[in-house]
Image 1 (cartoon, helix red, strand yellow):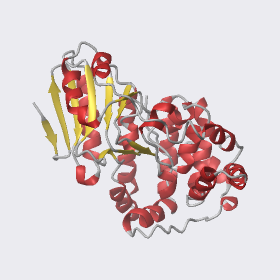
Image 2: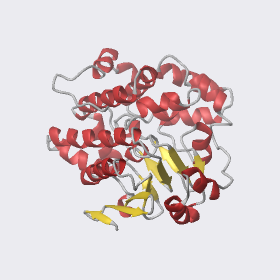
Image 3: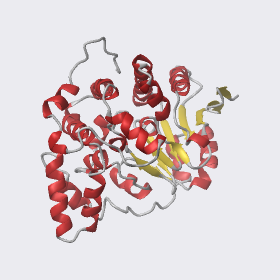
Length: 353
């Protein structure tokens, strides 16, 4: 039987499968607080239910798996000075990501279309990530004055070479081929087969058997295989400024990719770039729970600043795509301020283990 929560998320039991369907297709299945809380509660229930041996999550509509959290709502709350409500959303979302990470049964994300921000959080940390030919992943937070979160402080540094740092700084979009190359996706299946795959997951003796039945030849990587050496060289630099210097040098030597990448980075918030770079530096030394707490601390500081609200205004509200960052230059970002943003909060902190 299906259950709905505010007509935004559906839970179904199909044989041995617990199925979650994000159902806000007009909003690209962006997560609201009720959706987040309902999904975490249901995962806890299914974890304890012996009749459910596996869980799958998908998005309705075909355009997006999940384009992230409800950023406009967060923007409105923050602008109104309702900081506690803002942080309640982030804490709930991060707790959901942690629940996905520690879920004791096979967890399968069926990713069709756009997957960004919070959508990455509820897919990447599960055991299986099935990409379709419509898969399009990005962590575009530096472009709205935020930072890559939802556990990517832990996950992105684990990608081969410097692919994670590339994704964190640029917010660049990648397709299924690149996601499979990097390990962000584990399997590939055609979108037209997803419904049949769900049926197979409900009845097959193992998840692997169902996935093998509907496996298809994946697309070739578009970026990560061809540009891997350049990404590793440029994004292995010791600072964001040094990354840009290496990209500029590569562009002068004839790399169109380097030139386009440098231009993209220069549109991002200098403060956000500095935070993201430090996340990628610290991430390898953190457990998942420590990474989530780090992101919660960063979130508290960023929500009290200006770049997030300016970035959301420029990209989502007014859509003029002309944010006025403060500061607007990398060399004006205070390194001590960046380091302090990673420190403990004065107030009580949540746990994510």
